Image (cartoon, rainbow, N blue to C red; front, side):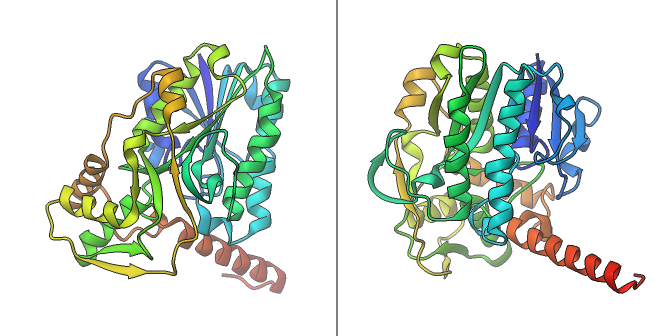
Length: 338
C-alpha cells in the first residue's frame, strides 16, 4: 500500500514514517523542510521525499496513493501566534486542500492530525462529543480543519480526525518545546525543571511512537469503525497536572526534584477521556510518562540529541526564519549583495 505523510520530516512524521516503513508500506513524505533533512537521512533510500507545501503542491503527487496522513502544520500554540493568518492558511485551509484533493484523486483513506488543544479550558472529563473551546489560533485552526474535512467522508472516502494529547519522547526531529521534553532539557542543562505557572493545569500526554501507532491503527481498521469519526489519542492514565508531572520527570531520571517557574498562568487546562479509541479500536499506549522522560534524558547524555540545537524550540526557529525572510526581502529590494 502506498501512503503519503504530509509533514513527514517533522517531530511525529519522522517517527510515523519509520514505523510505516517497518510495516512494509511504500512511503512518500511531503514536507517544507523548514528544519532541514537530518530527520530523514537514516531512511532517505527507503522513502520518496518531496519538498513542497500543502497549500500549492501539484495534485499529481496523489496519483497512486491509497492513504494520506495529514500532519503538516505550523506546530504548537506559541508558534501559531507568530503570524495567525499564516497559521490559518496552512493548518486549516492547507489541510482542507489536501483532503479535498485526496478525495478528488481517488485516495481511499485520509487521517487528520488534530489536537486536544481544541478543548481549551474546561472542567470535568472531556469526550469527543464535548463542546470545543479553542483559546489559540493553533487550536482554532485545528477545529476549523476538522469541521471542513470530516463532512467529506462517504462510502468511497474514509476520513478520520485524531485529537492527539501533548506528545513526548525521542524523535530524529526533536522538539524541546513540549512539556515533558522541555522539563527533561531544563534538568539536563540547569539542574532545574521549568514549570509553567501555576502548575495546576491538567494535560493529557502521549508518546510519539504511541500516537504514530494510533494513525496506523486507524488505517488498518475497518472503514465502518473509523469513517467520519474523531478519536482522542492517549489513555486515561496519562492525564496529569503539570506540577505532578514535573515530580514524575524528576523521579524517572533519578534526580532531586528542583524546579523553577516561568511564564504567566496557563489559560489552558483540560482532562480528556480516551475510552472511545480504547473500546472501538482496542488501542492502548505502550509507553509511560516516566519511560518517555528517561528516554529523552538518556539521548541527551549519550549525545544523540543536541541540547543547544536552535531548531528544537519551534517558536524560536520560526522566528529566526521569519527574520531571515525579512532580511532577504530587504536585500533584494535595496539591491544589496550579501
